[in-house]
Picture 1 (cartoon, rainbow, N blue to C red):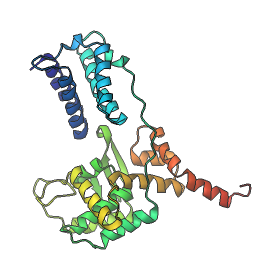
Picture 2 (cartoon, rainbow, N blue to C red):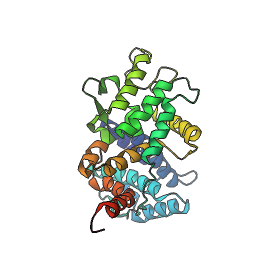
Picture 3 (spheres, one colour):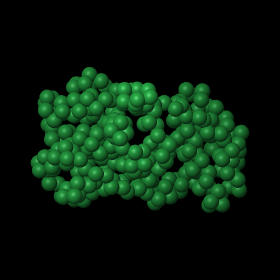
Picture 4 (tube, rainbow, N blue to C red):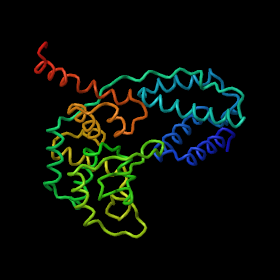
Length: 298
């Protein structure tokens, strides 16, 4: 193993000890492995960490652009490399963190496509009506109700454990990005759907997950995405709907009904208010329509 590869193993181990999410660990491991491959011409070992300068990093970044990767993907790969170099500097492996000198590509400011309240409710009502022959309709209904009713990330829903559900008080304990915990209210409809599912949920010893697959193991975020896509395609005729679509709808509909941004920020678990403010742009047209209709000076 080369010195660079060994240092990457140490860095990933530190991220794991710091409770980085499994998704982050998988992405960073793949990104850094590709970084090593780029620096390793055929039959040659990659350079020592201290020999990687700003020119090498810029050439690597140019190669990513030539590969027609999206800006979001390039930003993530650069973040992985920057994190590695920050670790190497702290450990005394390198004297200067040259990765800080690489300019971050600007991400396009795209707005999320958001379902209307009618579309979201029609989809969830269709799931509840058990119109599709599925082996676990109660589980699937509870899954949709929690995604839309609680605004959870798919990783948060997949990681939900039985002890995280306060059924008497109507709260969920959610572990978000960076394993930060927050409490999210459990609405009545979502709570009722969850109760129906848990009443028939198989009792599996030493399995704390709320949502189980057909083997009695934790239903993964990938499995949940497949379930959402299946129902959206068959019931709404829209294969582009994904779990985050329901989270976007949750935030946008709260805003349209008068919730303030700070409260929505807390509910979504956003570290920055600017992230939450994206949803104000989504519903701007609707808000202006209300203004034009109701304000005496419009």
